[in-house]
Length: 171
Image (cartoon, rainbow, N blue to C red; front, side):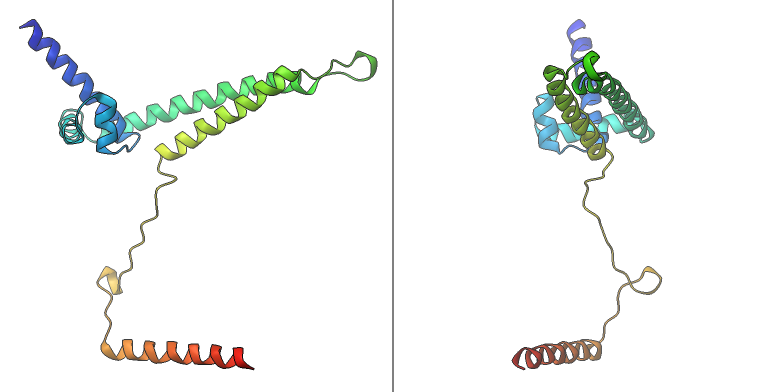
C-alpha cells in the first residue's frame, strides 16, 4: 500500500514536470522524456494526463509564474549591475579618484551575459523565436481560386519579364 502511494506520488511529480516542460518551455517529447527519465511516448501520455488533471488554464498560470521569476531575476541582475558598474568605472576626480576595479569589470561582463541569457530564455518561452505561420487564403478565408487562364497569363508575363531583363543585359 505504501509502495503504491509512493509510486503514485512519483508519477504525479513526473507529470507536473512534464507539463511544465511542455506548457511553459514548449520542449519536444524526446527532450522531455530524457529530462524526466522516460520515453518520449510516455512523456506525451504524461502530458495529456496532466492536462486532464490541471486543465488548460494551468498552462497560462505556469507561464505567468515563469515570467514573474524571469522578471525578478532580471531586476536583481540590474541592481547588481548598477553597483558593480560604479566600482568598475571608478569614482571621484583628481587626487581623490578611486581607480577602476578590474575584478568588478569582469563581474559586470559576466552579469551582462547572464542578463542576456535570462532575457533570451524568457523570449524563447514566450514564443518570440517561433517561426511565423502565414496562411494564404482567398475571398472570405476560402481557398485561392486559380484558373488555367490565370496560370497561362502569369507564365506569359514572367517570360516577358525574363526577355526584357535579357535584352537590357545585352545592351
